[in-house]
Figure (cartoon, helix red, strand yellow):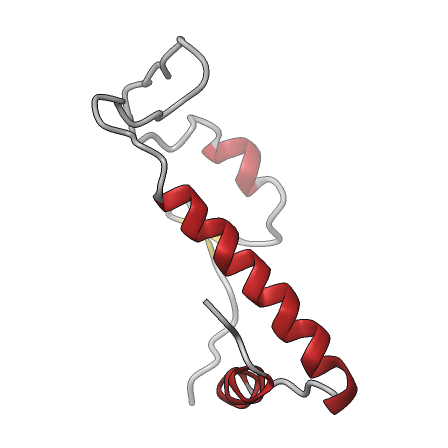
Length: 95
């Protein structure tokens, strides 16, 4: 696939980036070579090959989700100047 300087100009406008006129030609060649490389990957026969999810044989272990307050309410509330009913109290901000 051939990428032209006009293609680069259009993509730059859509991406809202500035590409100098002097570098559009070089960028067109580089993007074109990347697209050609990806096209070569599409030619590889992958029939019968399972998708690779992880290169390691080990799988992740899952811990059970438990919601707790950490049993540290008293220690946490020691940091507050004022607390009431096991909660921080703050000055009223709505008039």
